Length: 113
Length: 113
Image (cartoon, rainbow over all chains, first blue to last red; front, side, top):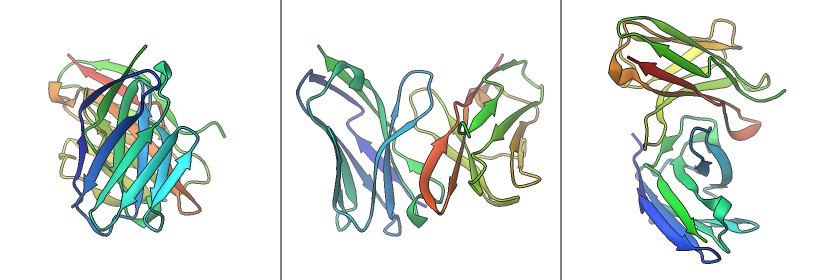
């Protein structure tokens, strides 16, 4: 089955700096890669996703890149703000997201004011 | 439609008791998923349904766990003879092919004492 690894497990950045979180996956059949933000005690919230036929996707301060050959994808947050502090999870799935998700272990991001 | 609803939000039970959780998905979504999340970890897949058919069950789903989606709408997850290790957040999500990507419910937090 699919295995998703995520690094780093914790990340602290100064407000205004950029943050990068990286994930690798094992199943070459995976074709959908979402990123979720989860605040303490709340549900995971989808912040951005990418399909395997696209190499990069951007939404304001958030971008995701995908390297299918190397089987890794990354989340980039620019101009970080205190409200970006949360736990971020990457995930992988087949069938463009209409399938079970395999999650990474999460990255606790702390933005230092 | 207000999204995926889960009930109850919190459940405290004594070890050995049975508990049942309910999930109401987005009405247009034909797939429904159950995940379990423990503190500091990513959600782990338990099982999923397409309409009323249970298509896959994880090895994590022991014989004490059973899930149903009798009419292809809401789903229930029952845990029999609860153990302390069952303490976790149980998340439900739904999806459909026409709208790839998941919507998660707020979860049911189970505490077994």
